[in-house]
Amino acid sequence: MRTKRLVLAGIAALALAGGGGTALAVNGGEPPAAAGETAGGGAREAAAVQAPDLPAASLTAGPRVVRPYQPVEIGQGARMGLLPEGRQNYVVAWENYAESVERAKGYAGDSIRPDSLSGGLHTEGDDALYTGAFRTETVPARITLRIDGGAEVEAGMLRLPGDPGRGTYYAFGDVSAADTGVTVTAYAEDGGVLFEQYVDASPRD
Image 1: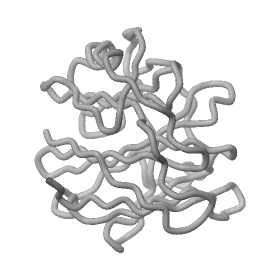
Image 2: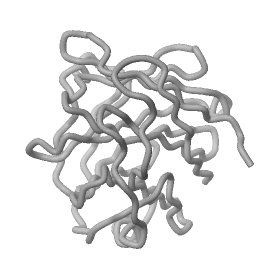
Image 3: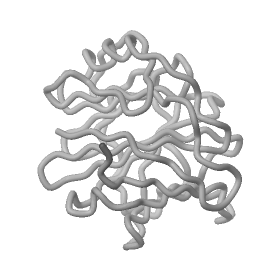
């Protein structure tokens, strides 16, 4: 598995790219790698729950609310979990989910900026998984990704209970386009754009 931190560049809407570190521990049989800087918390092992299929109109209802540390199956064998310690912390794991959460405790970082998002790219086989965190005053009703100017892809979203002011998004794409740019757009309930950012996924030294 290959994991990359994506470079964010704001192109339209409320904010430029988020700085600081969004927590992300990734485990695909290898020790988790940080995309951004990471901080974590104790794992509470729980049965994984299935995230909804992405190409569905119901995704406009906003993020799904999940418990802290709850492993959510997001597709292709990957699980995502949100950590409650703040700083938009989350974990993505293909194996050893609880271990990934525990290892995330070894990373530390700052919050991304308000009305902003982070981005990460994980590739394995023919699949590319785009993930990130958003931090907004208004909870997005939906988030989409447009990979290198191609077709728009609907992203799944998760957030913690209450009013955490943040959550995560995820979407799968073709690995053949994984080294091109992606535009991430967050929408309000009325269809207006909350913010939009371009993520440069081109290879970097």
